[in-house]
Image (cartoon, rainbow over all chains, first blue to last red; front, side):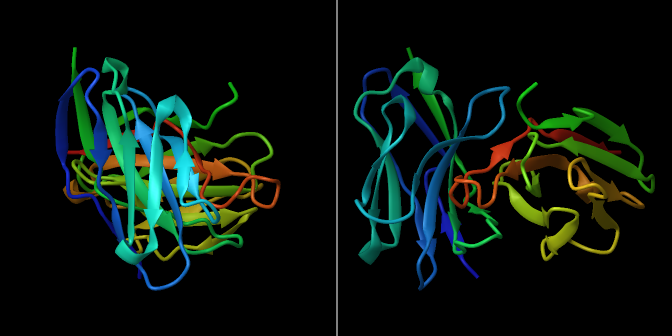
Length: 115
Length: 117
């Protein structure tokens, strides 16, 4: 079965700092990769996704992620964070392209941005 | 509203009691998922419905947990003889399989927080 590791449990940054959150997955076959975000008091929402093609994907709010197949990684990046980026970020993977879109999530990274 | 709706938002119950959690998905979404999120953890898959049938219930922890979706829309997650370890946020998500939405693009509700005393 596939699994997802997020090694950064809590990251604290100042506004305008650059961000990189790590995500590694374990599965030998083809995967689809996602980053979901949960802002305080809100529901989980999709930030960005990778299915195929260009390994550098861009999402909402200036976020991007790079799929590196050889490293089984899908790290999330943002060049300059804002206070409003304070949230919990979850990396997720699914191995099925048909029907069942069961996601396997990592444990999440809590991001705190200091004004 | 246009999003996934879950009720109740908070439920406190006593050990051994029966609990029902309801999910109203986005209109027209054929797929519905239940996840459970414990403190400090990511969401864990419980069960997936495609239409009225449970296509994958491999995540249900034991036979105290059961879910239905009788008309292919609203779903109810039922927990019998609740235990303290069942305390968690139960998340519902829906998606439009085969309708142009790519795999994994789930739309989540705000969750039902269950506390078992």
